[in-house]
Amino acid sequence: MPGSDFDRAVHEFLREYAVPKPLREARVAERLMTVRSVQVPSRWGDLCSWRLGSGPAVLLVHGWQDDNSLWSPLIDELDRRARALVAFDLPGHGASGGDWGVSFEGTDAIVAVADAMGPIDAVVAHSAGCGMAVAAILEGWAVQRAVLIAPPLVEGDRWRRYADRLGVSDDVALAAKAAYFDRVGPERAAWNPRSAYPAVDIDLLFVHSRDDERNPVRDTEEIIPQIPRAQLELVDGLTHRRTARDPAVINVVAGFVA
Image (cartoon, rainbow, N blue to C red; front, side, top):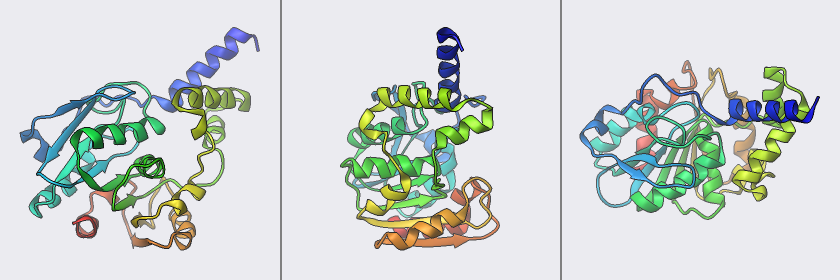
């Protein structure tokens, strides 16, 4: 393949992989509609953020192609319990600026929002947001406890998996991967969730549905025994996104961080 065609293929794959598709309109959790949003500058764009309550807060981190509205039920419950919270839209998501927003952009965003809107003493994350939060913790961000809902923990190279799904060659996928880590930090290229999660030395609550259609529960079950300070809450009959919004799950999560 000629160089220009190859470069174009790499660029297109990188955009497909790292740039979230915009929702029809930015959504805001109902309780946050009464709160003035704050634009927090970050390396990846200005981040639309909200705080409820004073003092140490729980940071809420949504996942890929989602936004703060995921947390509406949890926001209501934390507010009812008078537990301060901070919510935001990841880079390239919702009302936040930026372009890329698939992985370490979120890690940097977490730290930026925590610095601007803190103090933060706990984090609740969903799906891809779990890895972003774990990476932030392992890079020095300090919180006392974390809830990780439906984390993606499948083994193998996700760049190659995505290439297979799109019918793209490994050469294109690996070149895109190299370009990505040139931008977010080459030292992050060795990231592996199977070794990263067990290195987190804080109280952890994993929540996963046995019926999760996106991230298999068996991956979470396999890793839990390797994490001394982790506990697992298994639920039934919930889809990937509904797990973060289910009333029974909300009660467990709020109790853990409150």
